[in-house]
Structures are given as C-alpha cells and as structure tokens.
Image 1: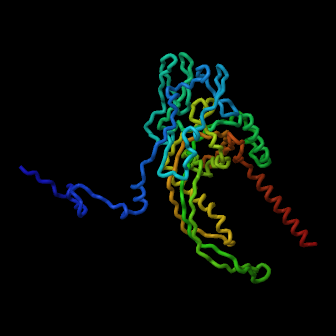
Image 2 (image 1 turned 45 degrees about the horizontal axis):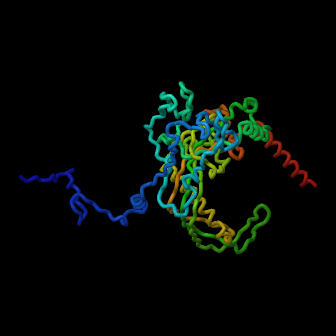
Image 3 (image 1 turned 90 degrees about the horizontal axis):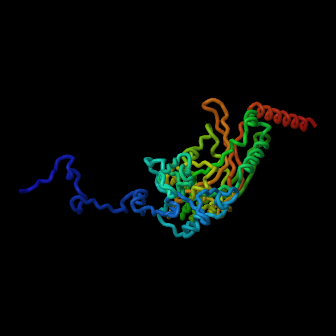
Length: 431
C-alpha cells in the first residue's frame, strides 16, 4: 500500500523547496540577508549573571552577630544596623562581588544580570514566605513594600530573591543624605526663586511631603565602536558688505570631507527603566529634572537587600533591555561624537556629521535602585494643570526642580527691565 503525499494548494509542497535542498529543509546563507536581520540571527543568546543572595532566599536577613531579624539601614551611611544588638555592617559591593567592573573592553554579546531579566506581566505581586522562626505563612505585597513582619513571632521577612515583575533589582545605592538635609536643600532652592514663585506653592510647602524614593535604573557597561563621516569647514577670509542696517558679514571657507573611527568603552551608564519617567512630556510634568541631579556614585552600590528599603518607597522597573536598546544607542552615539571632537578642532567653522554608524560589540546590564528625595506640587490649570517636581540626589545632595511662577510678576519684571533699557538707550543717544 503506497501513501501519496498531499500536493494541492496549501500543502507542504505548495511552495517549492530551495534548489539543492532536501525535502523540508530551507538552508539560508546569512551573507545574503540584510545586515540588521543577519546580525540578529547570528547574535549569541544573552548570558545571564546570577546576582541572587542564596543566604537571603528564605526572606530572613539575620544579624551576623546575634541572629536577630530586626535590620534597618543606618541613615547617612551604606551600613545596616541590627536594632537588637546595635551591630553594624555593610553589604558587599555588587561590582566587587560579581566582577561587574572587569573586562569591559572584552565584552561580546549581551550579558543581563538576574534582576534585569525580562519582566513577566503575569507574575503576581504577592509573595508568600514560610517564616523559619515559627512556621507561619507571611505574605509580602511587592506593589507597596519589600518587607513584612511575621504576625506571630515578629520576625521581619523581606523579598530578597529576584522575581520577574521588576520589583527586585540586582543592587541598591543606599541613601546618604538624611531627610532634614534634603528639606533644607529644597527650602534653599525655592528661596532663591521665591520672588516669582506662586503664593500657594510657598504657603503649602511642608517637610512631610518630601519623600525618599528608590528609582529604577539600568546601569550599563558597553564595548562599542563608531564611524562618522561629514564635512568640515576652515575659514580663509571674512569681510563685510554694505553700510548701517544693511551691513552684512561674509566669509570664505575651504570645505573638507572628514571621517573618523573611534573604539571606546562605557562604564556604568545610567538609563531610566521606568516608562513613566522616560516619557518626558513637559506639558504635563517636570520629571525630567531627575536627570539633572545625575550622576550617582554607582560604584558604591551594594548587593540587593530589602532591609535598605525600610522607611523609603520604591518604584518598580517596567522596561526591559530590549525597550532600552534605542536609548542606549543614542547615548553611545553622543559619546562617540564627544570622543572625536578633539580631533576636529582645526575646522574652525565646525563639522557637520552626515553619516553615523555604531557597532555595539558587547553590553552588560544591571538593574539598580538609586536614591532620590522628591517633592511634588500640582499646579491647577487647563488640561489637568502641571505637576512640578523638586529632586535631591540622595547621595550628593545636588538639587534641581521646577517652581510654579506667577505669570503677572514675570510680565511686570520684563516690562520694567525693557523700559529701563529703553530709557538708558535714549539717554545715551541724547548726550
């Protein structure tokens, strides 16, 4: 009995195989594919870096000296303190623990630490732990907290194992600036601008509204190279034509084609991993001020430990590596332009880059919480008004923000200055 293979429309034989290929196989020569598709097919799978703490996976952070679990961050330092015996210690620096500062110039492909892995939208925010102190089940809601106290034996449990909902990073950079210092810096910042500040903004400011929050970032190492091509101009002559108001300045210049190649590495580039803050819509809010308080000393970040978050709030990461690749490439191109700048200074009329090509040979991604003191104020108005922010870097104290102003004061000041300038001009002309 013979079996005849289907051959009609829609059958496996409807599309003829590539000549020379055996039935059912379609070998493709990568060299014949477009560059982006070829690179994606040939790229190695991302390498995972396990940054988890095995000793903390039961949810209990024990004091190394007495074994108690009442652990808190010691304000103003990188240390943890046991509230029972007062012993203090510092968690291991994540870079030293996992060698994350090494071999950047040898990076190939993509390396992603466990806290920076892809987010699974179906992952539950509730995490259940079995308390090893008494055996009770304790639930932690990672939407609003990373620690919880056992209601029976009062042990403190924390989410210290990376879970794929974006709530647990690889590292945390602890607060150094205390709240009272942050409040003082915000008062000073507003004080310098109070002449034009909205009256309600000044009256409604209260220290209780200044909140310490850990914001999610990706910290990236990169090994890259770039080629840029364009035209540079060297001025040879400058002269004027016409008289009075009709006078114009002209110049002659020699034009040269300019090409540059640069190999470079980037160590600890910080990229926002929150969609909310990545959307810099200045019509609705001023959250772009947070970028103005960079940089952070990310080299001092410690291994993730939920005890550092006690007393502070945190924001979950909601962007994966693939979402942040375009922003990384934009920043790497900016770095490449800066790298070649010193070599094109002879073109005194400037260089206009017309073609740019970036090759990213390797990257390493680490998810990290960075500390920010934040004050917000909603200014009523059309289209929902404007949300103003003042931010303080939780490590350096650098402060930047947006202060709502009274428009009539600005207009009055502008008219006053304009009238004064006009009066002085008439006085000089009349002399």
